[in-house]
Length: 397
Image (tube, rainbow, N blue to C red; front, side):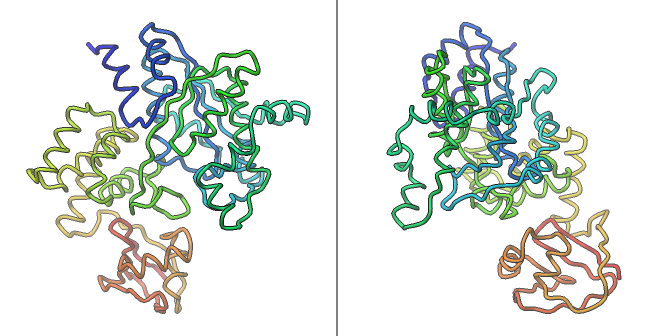
């Protein structure tokens, strides 16, 4: 039988950077209070990636303790754009793009949460109704100095880059979300610290107790850059089992423990065991990474499909055999610039990313590595194109 105190301790420490107010939150959980725990996600892309799943897994931990989960899909804040993690102004999205992006967000979150017990809200419900009088009341609770002292904003101002007034309003909107849903706790990444604190600032103005805050660490993408859909270095909750398994296997070895801690819920004793084996070089990192890939794939697709994905991965990448099913793509005969060909195959999200993959030696045509982004390829039937370690295509003309 699980020890509630141990579960609470792990909830408040595993993958956690900071808790405000730690003593207050621990006391409430220990007393068994049914807290309203909030997470907001802006639909800036159609897929939720496992970087965003880190706080959702925390929601799951709270849910298992009997708390009420409130998932806010930022259909209004998504239009405005949060620049908390950006060094340049985030462009505004159209309502149509936001609507399309968020279409399956609840279903994706349901891979982790018991979605039938979750309050799923859309913040346009309350933010669209605010007028200047109310916004002015809220804005009066913050100083401009607080906003411009944020590291990424200060960098832009010091270098003479534009900071829009729209960006100043974003933390206020996120803070008002907490008022609207009467949040007791808000979860977010370390890049969200200012926005999370905005809720604690606004709630007393509306005669509410200030929410506690739990900040999770950020994880890096498969290429050790910040996980971002625009860079194509994400592992998405919507990825099929083979693709998800292969992406996890492609992460650098020094991210293995980090992913175990943040992206799985295996016991921390097992994580520490794997960490020791890696440090002592007592185990091949590849073998431990296979366990990681199986754990993550099992979380979203079940053990049976995860085992099948592992078997296929070993067949293709360890035994150097061709995959059981190579996707066939139809391409008209002719000559193509290689970056454009990759873009047409949807093997890269942009031409710049396609060029980067080529220059890094990630692209092979019939087992021949091509590193020149200016290369022109004559397409022919049954051509085999490899992009990275996981993507393989057979061409039909």
